[in-house]
Length: 159
Image (cartoon, rainbow, N blue to C red):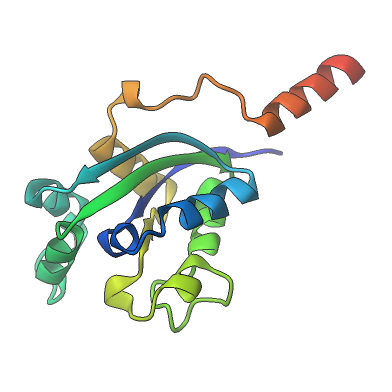
């Protein structure tokens, strides 16, 4: 049984500043995910507070807010088969030291505080985070990827 999902991914300020946008996007596209929403934006302190509200009051909260507002991010909505779990696997463990070799964080980050990318950790978080960063009309799901076109054509001609 297929389970198409959407998840939220953000290339954080350090990833943008280091010119890693294309390399990170390539990881998701190579896996076959469909990017249905994407934009470059400066996160405001208000948006950052909403994004990290579950961490309010924790010792590292102010550092999170400072970091995510320190430069532009690339916000994305990624769609595909079991996207939440698969994308988190591609991204790697929060701490780059513990991330598996070949993951984004293992390949492009050294310390947890600057770990290049954020990915939603559940369907509920994904829905909430997508709602924070995207209006419904900013999500473009009315196009077919080449994989979908090939699959559709196979079913149409052989089914």
